[in-house]
Length: 258
Image (cartoon, rainbow, N blue to C red; front, side, top):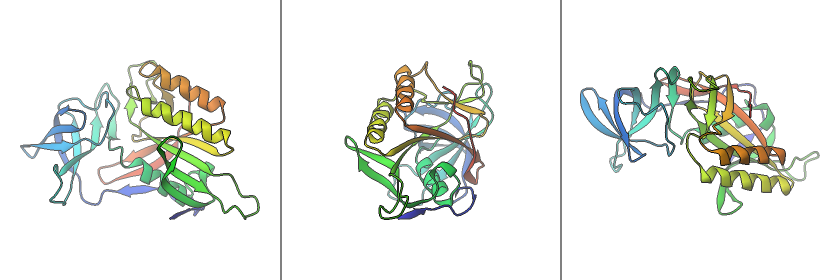
């Protein structure tokens, strides 16, 4: 169990445990698979991302892979980073959706995110709602004077930017229709109705965006659902990341414009 108490403004950073391997994307297919040219050899890699990865699945793109030492894994390689190429932005983009939850939990524990600092307990993957699990649950000791209501924090990975669109410098979510995301908005709204805090935290795994928007043209239902949730008292935060082949680090908050 991790503490959510503020410990100074130390940024949360995840370092890759072993050096990433640079290659060139040949193709992404079946959503969770990619072929990559690595040191002149074609290898298959796991793609830990259920989204469409618009603009980040272009053949020939520079990519970085991690390699597992587990001999029992079917695929040793995992796609971690893609270098965005014109016209899809610039710089490295994290595409592994397995990292944001841990990054956010570490940031809350470090006091990096002021709106979520100071709670007595932080728990992850706690069951709630209709057969769901909340990414982060923050709690105060109920006997403590001034104890706050629990805060339910749902973390969403963001990697979409469309520089040639109407909001060219915006980070956008989602990058395809997400019925699961819409369900989470409803459940977060229900937690507010029960007297709890509910916070949507959008983590942008790239550093070339100035603000956050919903991709209303890609998923109008999610856009409308977020508006309803915010009107009902659900809170929303957004942070971007600084990314290198060595690490991913929470960098700065981004304004949300809907």
